[in-house]
Amino acid sequence: MAHTIDVLSDSTGETGERVVRAALLQFPQATVAVRRHVRVRTKEAVEPILEAAARDGALLVFSVVSPELSRFIREQTAERHIEAIDVIGSVIGRLEAFLCAQPLNRPGALLPLGEAYFRRMEAVEFTVKSDAGRDPRLLAEADLILVGVSRTSKTPLSTLLAQRGLKVANLTLAYGVRPPLELERAPQDRIVGLTIAVEKLCSIRQERLRLLGMPPETQYAVREHVARELAFAEELFSAHPSWPIVDITERSVEEPAAIIVQQMHSPLSLPPIAPADMPARGGGGAC
Figure (cartoon, rainbow, N blue to C red):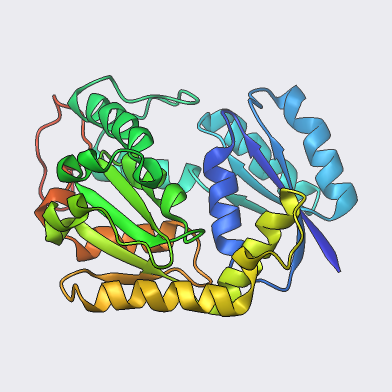
C-alpha cells in the first residue's frame, strides 16, 4: 500500500524532509511519496495543503516557527483528523525555557556571518578542488582524507563533512594502481578507508551504468572485477593499521559521517556554534 507524507515548511522544507527521509530508512519496504510545500507562511496557503492531506490520508510533517501559524495547523489537523508531527515547534519551546530567551520566530533565520561561516566556505572550496585526487599535493593540507574504490560515497561524504568546516580530500583507488606518494607523506592519523559489501557495490555500479546508457555487463560492475578491487583496497588498508575503516553498506551518508567524526582526533573537534555575545551557561534549570 502506498502512503503519502506532506512536508510543510515556512522556509525551504529541507529540515522536515531530511528528518522524514532519515526516519524512512528504517522502513525499507514501505512505498512512500513525499510532497514538499515550501514558504508556506499564511493560513490561506496552509488550507489547500490540509485539504489534500485529509483527502489522501497523508501524514503531515510541518516545520513552522510562527507560534500563531503553528497553533492554527495543530488545531486544523486535529479537527480534520490528520496525523501531524511538529518537527521544530516543540524544540523551540523547550529551548525558549532552557535558555530563558525569546526566539526570533523568523522563517529561515540565519546565523550571523562569523569565523565559523568563513571556515566552512574555505573548507567547501578546498574539498571541491581535492575531489577524486585531482591534486595529490593538497593531501598534506587536508583535515581528513577519504580513501576507497569508486562509488563508495567519497564525494557525498566529503561534501557533507566540508559543510561542518573540515577540509576533506578524497582519493579513488584503482585496481593495480599504486596510490600517489603524497598519501604516504600525509598525516596518517587523518586518513580513513571506506569499504562496502561486494553485492551492494555491484548494484550501485550497475545503476550508474544504466544512467549513463552503458551495458550492465561492463567490467566496472562485474562481480569478479569488483571483488578484486575491494580486495586490492583491503590489502592497502591492512598495510596501514592506523587507518580507521568505515563500512558504508546500507548506511545513509550521515551515518558514516558521524562515525568518522567520532573516530578521528582533535583536527575534527569543531567548536560549538553559539552567538558571540551569549554568556556560557551550565546545565539547565531556572532562569
